[in-house]
Length: 325
Image (cartoon, rainbow, N blue to C red; front, side, top):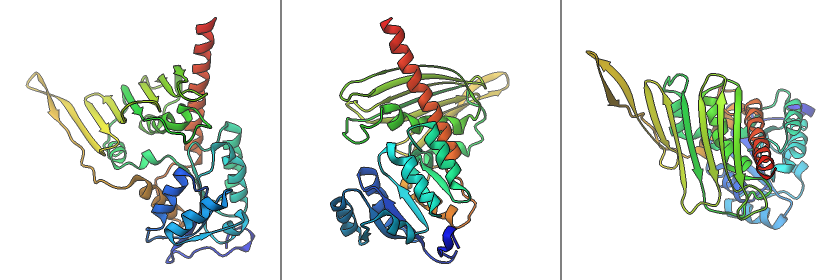
């Protein structure tokens, strides 16, 4: 039984999932959930009924007229509404005894993230950092890399009118900040950042230089006004160097070896099995609901990524203030 006596899915049954918010990202969740064998897409809900009805018709599910009716019918919910509503709507879902996967960022403030963590109790609270589930990232994290000395990340995308309620740091860079913390869990020691608004009234391109307590330095750039799409991560962890192409799901690298007093570079390529990152994320969420031991981005990790992202935003504002002084 879940909170309030609601019956939940047994381990040998398909896990019942609903989606709240059927915009660009929510529609992707609906599409993937509709084909998953371990989950039953019970239905969708959106403040714009016509959008929910269209998504439901496309994927053979039900458009619910009320959020409460959907949450009463499911074990877990994917929340893909605008960031500003994550805390309020997410807390309502969790308090109804329903497991929650909230799209990144977890909330638009640390107070909102803390509210979600408090409301979760023994329910699953996962955060939709889908890039973490990229098989290339998982291969790197499983490679016994050691502590990185330098990390460089570029995430460039063409302009889109989605997610204009937040800036490029919370929209795009936060993916890479979460991965940085997965690579090196030490605390943030120093931060400098700058950002520029180009086509929206918020920062559309940003660069941050982060120094962690371990001594690792990360240079992270994100843009949503680029002419080309680039998503790459380079990490130097002596004696290893690896380069990830997020889009191609490839990891290439070299290792520095010393033999007979001579140093040489030896190619080191990590094996990657291509996969749909979003499906892996959703499968992991379902596994968590079913009590399986899974590796996912939980609420506390989502909060940490948000905390660093907000620190980047604050550093950008301070840089602009100093520039104008």
